[in-house]
Length: 148
Image 1 (tube, rainbow, N blue to C red):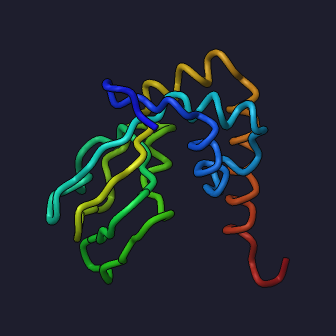
Image 2: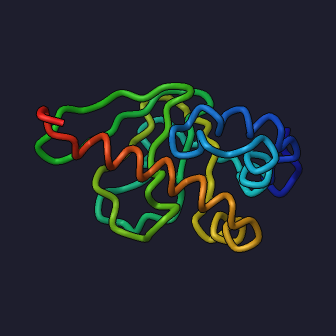
């Protein structure tokens, strides 16, 4: 449910969406709600770019409805649908986007901006600690050699 400013008025509903994102898997329900309170929704028309390769990363997105395509130079196009997400590393830094994500149909996304997310990290340090544990586990898993 949204109020007229586009802000989410049902953080509990968004917390459920965020719970399915690996980056947030270590967060408690209370912390998921805190993060979710900062989310907004945005609708994109068919063929509209949601993010463009090379632009500064400033937000994380979860597709709530519709379909989109991820286009990255030299790579096969990846199709996204409801429940898929992208841009989670933009919550941590403003590095340029590595791919363009374009709406294929009308798309409704949940958007979590980096600035709003950083305010959560400042007020709730345990959110950052939980995320660091997840990132460390993912980095450890990706760097394991077959001999490990």
